[in-house]
Image 1 (cartoon, rainbow, N blue to C red):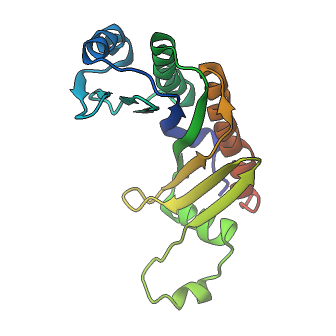
Image 2: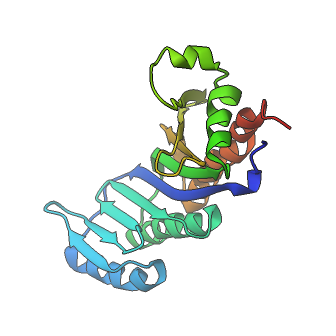
Length: 218
């Protein structure tokens, strides 16, 4: 059974960037929170003991603002593009408000779930197609319905990309995929940050998906 590429869905996007230190007065953080809370589904403001604050929402959205670091993440109900606009949009608004210049990417994280629609097919995709391990060898692990995952590390210029491909034990018909890119190049603005996130997404739906499907049964 060949997995349906349309059932590979992004469920989470997160990113963390560093930048030159900026002042974050508490009263201004409150004003900034009020200006973005409704548009980004943020319902709670929590000040840090040191300068900075965390904005969060009931749907998993979170934005952490510190003098020299920002982190933005969210669960994406409508897929990657919706998540990208929310996550990077918040960074862009903070960049404009606090006069932040160049940023350095610490990490970009994508979490996806691929619904293979059948538990046996999902197990076969991982064990037989991706890892190509036969049943006789699996029996050496002495367990019932043993399944396996895979970790991939990839270098591209200054950045490093780690991919985890694992079974979802709570929903055995699905495969869990997590990509984390670290040590990215300098990004001059939110537009470049969006392009950096797109590159991780494009690797997921391009080379990585092709790698996983290369030996799937037709």
